[in-house]
Image (spheres, rainbow, N blue to C red):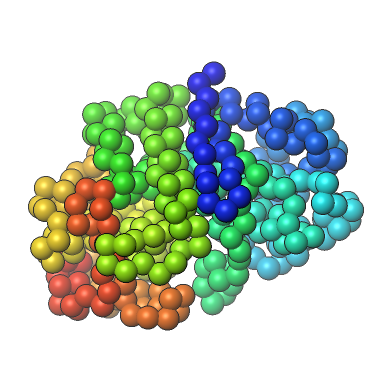
Length: 359
Ligand code: GLY
């Protein structure tokens, strides 16, 4: 068994355990708990039951809808009702087992039940491991937008068992890799070299490469949230947690434009290609690093182009980002490998031209 731990030291320090077989550590993180509720999607029912049975505490299984459909007020209420029905107290714990949407919901249930009970996150996708499960963002969606209700609530621990990736559909695997590539460009270029050496091996869930990549990407996220858990406002080259939004301004607009049928990573793959091109056109990034985005994402068979005619709708959708920050259009751009910067209200012509070059 190859297991590593990564320390996250933001407000309540915890460890992320990564490796094939990491789930074997669950009982030790729940040793002093009376009961555990495992929140899981339908497909992971058997896995959730096995997980619960491995611990010496009473088990409550709470099944929630698949993916983003779980992140609703109604499902949150159903989880609270299940905990109330079972008489859950502060000596009990919650485990979130699933992709990023499930762990976002489960973390919020844990944050709100009795004003906070122990929460263990068990992500089952690459995206969940390298992004959603680490950093304490929990919450649900509203009709008015994604993640509008939530809290920063750090887990007690995160267990990333790479064996869980073996049953992941290939498209999901590739999509998660977009967030790994993001970590490479914004902070750890060694990630890019590992993928470029052999993209197919990088996607092999049983390989050493995925282990190294997931660990490196989590370490990038741990460092970023350790310095700025609550996403203070970033200015110029002083970029905090917002750095993790690299490629996301356009990426979120594409997800919306595609009616959320694209995987998140597919949308941010186009978003990163775009913002690298924007950075290059503004004279802030060299040609080779910009082109490297297209090469590496294409090698992972992720999309790097988008029809030019979609620009007016995407530009409109990007305005919705203003709602959360209350200011103008804002991008995280790249100035050199491993160095992001904030770009506020860029010239509209440059934006459109950079986008049209993706067509
Ligand atoms: N997914 C971006 C963040 O955790 O801040």
